[in-house]
Length: 450
Image 1: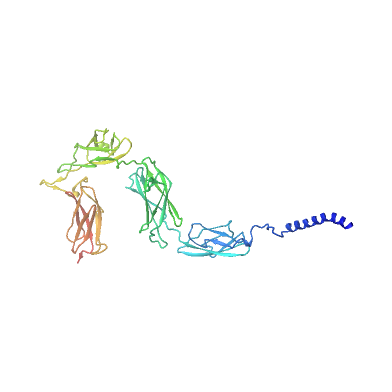
Image 2: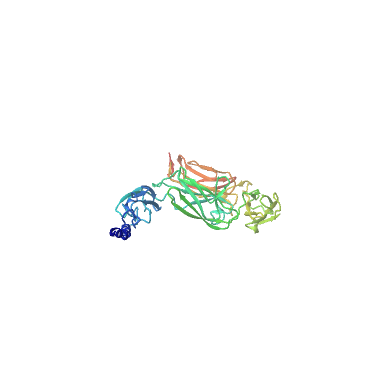
């Protein structure tokens, strides 16, 4: 009887004691309870991804560190080429390689908090695959003072891509971007004739080239263009100037584009005064106005021109070489030239001479040769020939030379070449524009060539 009574009131006490023991084990971390530290060696092997990378000097490169026990630390085998901080931010290791002159592999070691280690490497290439500037060229060159491109004009942007040795690098993709300015790239993509980003691949000579377009409404401004080597991420910015200059040559035309009225032969050269020349304007938006850069020397009648195909007349009031600017109602313009030049001089026998050295003031019909004096310093090879540029007068140009040298003209280029024989130095080559000629002095040494 007593035993039954004891078991009745002891049983609840024993149950409470057993429950307290279980709670005590859980509080001490026994059984299946998890630790308070979230990082543990069993989180997987310590790994760097990618294990081997390829980078470029000055261009950030990112590795990922996973597994092991964070936090991580890192040591570089060459802290100059691959500088690293002592710790890793989270799981990302960002490195910025230093400058190298040749491809250089560098390794590094990552350690975790538990003492585990792993290694990675980065092959560092020279960074400068692009030049220091982008070449922007107008097509044609912008005639406005100080402008690279004019409003309404197109042009090209190019970079020379080089390999680490400095030679041309073909097959490199270069992305061009509009950073600032009123211009766009000309694209061949369907429905996208003008874009703000365009890529080009460098050719066998290392040049990557894209076409630019500036709208006719563009104001004078400084524009910025960027070129990026897609492989390395290297990029450069360059500035160029856009000038508000509405050249309407593409839609406006004038006929004749150039006119010259020669004076009559006389013992004293004179210009033709009052001889009329009529110009006709086509295209654009009429009416057209006409302005001369030397208005006191010419008379212009028939302006404004009220219709396409209409004309205006110019007469010289003195000897003049004039630029005429024809502007349409939208502000586009085109230029024409007008000249009234001295007539040839006649000798006492009545024949006409074209020796330009006899004219004072200079006759506009005479050619100009620059430089006016050439030197030949060898019989063959380098120094045996020299060139000069011809301008003015009437084309085509021709040349005459004494024995011992030859003189040829190609377009506006005069070439004088040493021939065999003995000459007296200096000698004279005559350059002709029609019946007018200019003398060019040629100094020759040695005087005798086999």
